[in-house]
Image 1 (cartoon, one colour):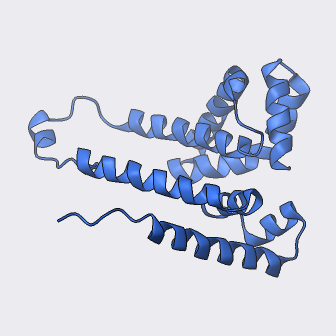
Image 2: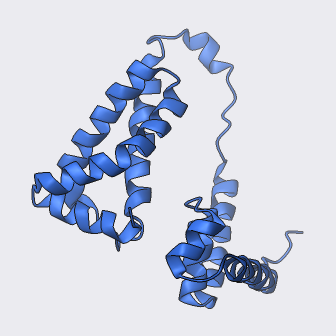
Length: 186
């Protein structure tokens, strides 16, 4: 199923089109189930999670505001979040507070958070410097996980051309990131 077709189907689901919902389920439930199964490691739990995911898709399709190309990513995010909720629910409630006190906070501290935001802004700036098709292909390859073959088919170019696009785009990104490097902290 094409990525932009998913966006169109979600728009129809938002209007309560059962045929569109059925098509999304038919085409994407195996992939979303694989995510559930990989995360939950229990078939029964994964089946229940998938059912919850599709209820959520039916209820929240109207809140999807993407351009259609990110619709699959949006569905995968709903699936991951639902699985994370189920994993959290598995944890025993009321764990010993003394034991919790000894746990280190592994999340980023405020300085690291600020640096990550700055780094993200630099990446966004450099991505904007790329040709829009190349930037989209880089995002699809390295964020959404599409293969070179899938990208070549999506952009109707030979496989080696797609590899060249991505390699050159990454070189341009690296060059841009070096140009926009933060000043060293002293």
